[in-house]
Amino acid sequence: STQVPEGSTALGGIGCHYMSTFMPSRPAQTFTQMGGEGVTWVGQAAFTETKHVFQNLGDGTYFHSGLLAIRQALAAGSNITYKILYNDAVAMTGGQPVDGSLSVAQIIQQLKGEGVKRIALVSDDPDKFSFKAGDGLSIDHRDRLMTIQKQLSEVPGTSVLIYEQTC
Image 1 (tube, one colour):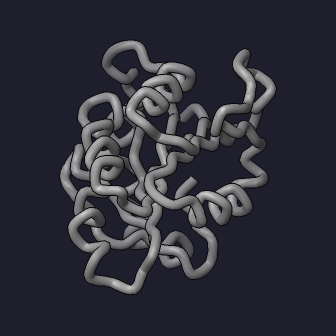
Image 2: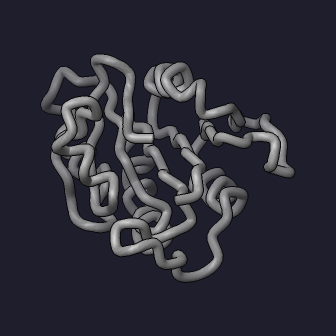
């Protein structure tokens, strides 16, 4: 889930995906406090030649405070793709359930309500979802992860990739 297309930049955050900041095969740079994922890019983007970044964000952090960071990126018009790593657990501390109810469908509806125009869902079992693609939402097998990420990196503004795989 933390791999990105060659030449792309990814940013880390709080969660098990933080380990990608020290893995050469998954080049995530920097990290930030819980709920600040992507906000550093909002400030940095105007001062770099990099046009787009991927920001890893766990579903537990999304539920806790990460939606506010996405809201900030939308307000700023940042070229960023949030990768919500939906594993249905607080994986960094032992796999406890996420506090509260949070389904993939709820995340998609919330993101659309916030103004995200392009959302991609990838899963090892995309047929299990009762909702259908359309209106800016695509649903694909995770085997297409790199292709989908390349497409999202070309979308102006803030986009979201939900990588669904239970931990």
